[in-house]
Length: 311
View 1 (cartoon, rainbow, N blue to C red):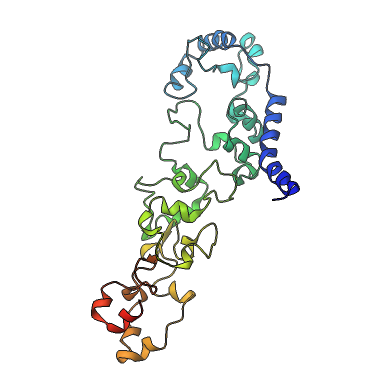
View 2 (cartoon, rainbow, N blue to C red; view 1 turned 90 degrees about the horizontal axis):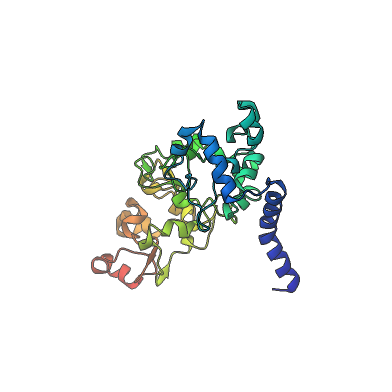
């Protein structure tokens, strides 16, 4: 890589982070000391005593610790206008998250949370580009979830992605509705490289389906050579759900004949018996084989001499 290309590469990687850091620094109010946060929080709780309980169990929990190791979190870190509100407590002079625009919510959250996810939301993330605000996916109060997601099953994704919700209701589907898989198991919301978040989709699939990942002595090229929408697996499978068995894009031999024609001998040899079976009746090791370049069922070697020669 030349020096100019290397410079461009690192600029693309670091620029979003720098821009977010600058925007947060420029818009963040005066930094409050830990003592100030504790003092004002106690003042807030004189009227809003239920709010402390609503934060219990979360990373935003209110603490009375004053040691240097304690995280400095307090009401005024998120709610601006508190000085006026203390003197004249009305809903009009104190900010709440849901009353802020998407950009302003990102600014408030970005005072503490400057992560890959935050950077992506102001750069490459389609959610951020579509104006999706932090609080449409996260809730701060009354939430003990580690990532403050709207609910612990994270099915809130489907409230916007209605078409995907329908796919999970098909006869062959990943078990999202039973709770055995979650959206974020495949979609990395902190990813910045791939617009559908499933960076390296074939490897995402192989995290669970390791028995199909190889390496094999005889590889099926479609698994890793023909990449569509992020990975080879989706050449044959619909990742959310399908009306066909095994999440296949097409029924029967439809998937196979997209790339492979049916050999003429299949229709004539042995009275055309080969044309009466589906491809996978004989080619069972379609993801790859340890012993056969045609991905044939190993048992065929004992039943059929011509198939034994094809090994």
